[in-house]
Amino acid sequence: MQQPFVFMMGQYEAQMPADRMYSKRHLWLQSCGADVYRVGFTAYSVRLLQDVYFLEWTVDEGSIVRDRQEIGEVESAKAVSSMFPPSGGRIMRFNPELLRDPAGINADNYGSGWLYEFCPDGELLTAEQYLEYLRTAWEEAQRTIKGQMNEG
Image 1 (tube, rainbow, N blue to C red):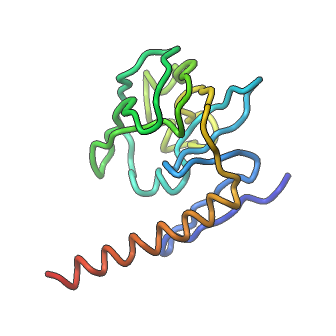
Image 2 (tube, rainbow, N blue to C red):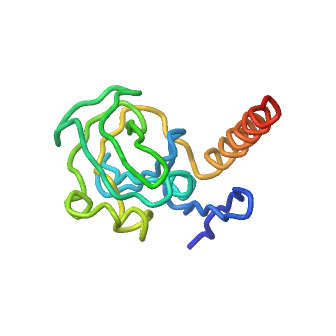
């Protein structure tokens, strides 16, 4: 098995398994059948969200969704955040365990904490491409934070 890629978020190590695809919305996609992928939050997402304790879907299983369409909300210690699909496609089914208790996202985001099964119709990133995207996004986030601190 290939070693996971690692991205350093300050002192925090965000691991990204090399055996799956990724999206710029900080979601991982792992094949679980013919053109069907399980989707979950990356370590980067989980770190930014912190302790997830509520999950709500605003679409139904089997729904065809557009790229950038809001499909639900996640509530965490940090904030309430809208959720979007990795691309356009069809949501096949939601993880029934997370509907009862979303704490699985915190405990095992790359395993039992998967969110839903999805048939994408858009472009996905390899682990290497996602790592490069993270480097760019992280640098931009750091510049924004420093700029806000310097304005005060």
